[in-house]
Image (cartoon, rainbow, N blue to C red; front, side):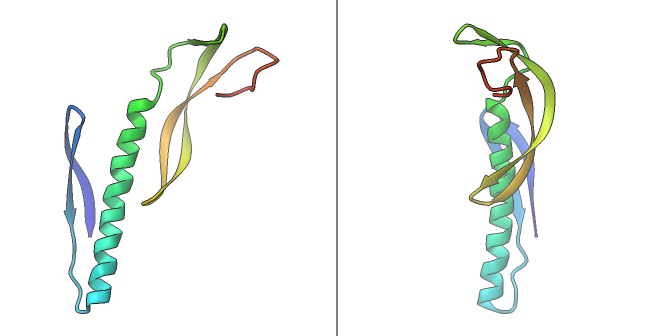
Length: 100
């Protein structure tokens, strides 16, 4: 079983899945669910990437937030946990949280 991203076309994501059908219906259903969940995690990771910042400084309510670079973060999805790099931004404003 496998799911892999074949290509991206603008906002479309083409994912190929390969499923090994088993000797019992229950085992086949579990195999189908596993590979569909794998495809879901791949698609969710790509969706998250499109909403991440590009690392440039941003201003929120008059406060400057700057990137400290990317760090690996874990996300819970309906398809399972994924690990995805995301920008870590901070501000020096003492009244604000240290990370956004």
